[in-house]
Image 1 (cartoon, rainbow over the protein chains, first blue to last red):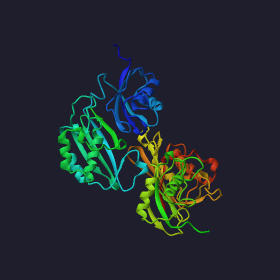
Image 2 (cartoon, chains in turn orange, green):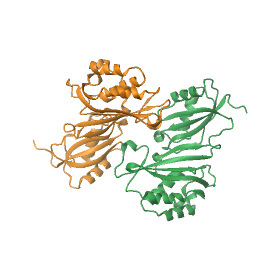
Image 3 (tube, one colour):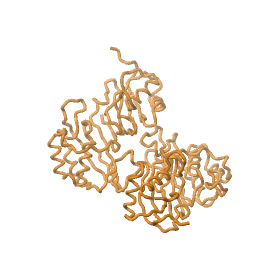
Image 4 (cartoon, each protein chain N blue to C red):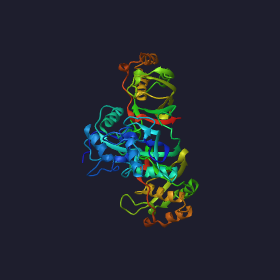
Amino acid sequence: MSAVAGGRYRAVVEYDGTDLLGFQRQANGRTVQGELETALARIGWQGRAVLGAGRTDSGVHASGQVIAFELDWRHGSEALGRALNANLPADVAVQSVAECPPEFHPRYSARARRYRYTLYNHPVRSPLAARSSWHVWPALDLAAMQQASAALLGRHDFATFGADPDQGSNTVRTVTAAEWRAAADGWHTFEIEAEAFLFRMVRSLVGALKQVGQGALTPAQFEALLAAADRAQCPPAAPPQGLCLIAVLY
Amino acid sequence: MSAVAGGRYRAVVEYDGTDLLGFQRQANGRTVQGELETALARIGWQGRAVLGAGRTDSGVHASGQVIAFELDWRHGSEALGRALNANLPADVAVQSVAECPPEFHPRYSARARRYRYTLYNHPVRSPLAARSSWHVWPALDLAAMQQASAALLGRHDFATFGADPDQGSNTVRTVTAAEWRAAADGWHTFEIEAEAFLFRMVRSLVGALKQVGQGALTPAQFEALLAAADRAQCPPAAPPQGLCLIAVLY
């Protein structure tokens, strides 16, 4: 089968996921993939699908999503970025574009993904941050949350905290970073990096770690939840608006 | 005429102005004042109007708007804040409430207001910041903008940059601070403080200062615009989403 004519490009994409039904194209409703494909089609793209590194959920944001597509384009990659952004809606934008080797696959070539989750730990909610954080009160014990998070590092069966996105049963993943950072005025961020993530894994972890921060779970109980590898024991997941895919590493 | 029964309260209010038609109540559409009055009415308020310190435009945000109202309330001011927030939509929230003397008026008692305008000076727009900043490119000369801004300090007739909000003709105001701050990656903020502002004044100033930053006006020409005191000479105003009322000083 002959490939689409033209070179292969990779791009870093930022989006405000609030009004998008996640990355993956759907029959009805706006998605990141759908918006990218529509914009590409307007500048001559005839491919079958834009490839993405991570299938973010409905409502989840990205500042560092990576995509790839093939396109016959003769005006340079900077002009390609401008042409795409002129055809994309306000909540999606290509931050950079570059040619890449034909074998580059944003998902299978990735060696790690990094997500950031933002909590606002304050007695009063903040309307200006409502779209990009989870408002949590009473006060969180960040030290306990950091202690529990340390148990995530390394290779574990994360079955408690998510499902295999490919509907298989491989729920073993390797986490290489899991750090809470407390900022002024109750802004706390959790950054986690892994080779790959299960479906809902970051939000499920943050939901459980918030229970640790509020004393509903001890760090030891959190560790036991992880060891159980049992999805039925998962505490409620954190909401999507606090989550952002910040980087994909190759 | 007898006043509404109960004590007088002042509150600091934060809002995301994107989907609001400004502070002032209108016959049709959501406004900050309208939402506050609806929430207050649900907890027993029977007053005529909530008073505000600044009548922000449609699309303009606030982290430090100040309001006052009278209410018969017996559960303490912290519980009052919680009750109001439970009845306000996601884009408006009371940050603090306290009893105040009956003569306190958020607008007439104020000795100064402080606004912040946020510019994103980058080749590519940022979807995650689209609701809270003005995307501007090419690169701005911040030093020229700061030089021009220095001319604003002190007592001047600002007729070029706005109209008297009370439909009078007093366009003389005293500006006590006007500072640009350049942040990493093209995030620039302009903070301006004055006893009071004209209608559209901050957005008009930022629109003109952006022209200074892009070389369309020299700092001397900007100063001449100010001296002309002629509304007809005003460059296009900056869009509302970059503007935030951050403090009212008493």
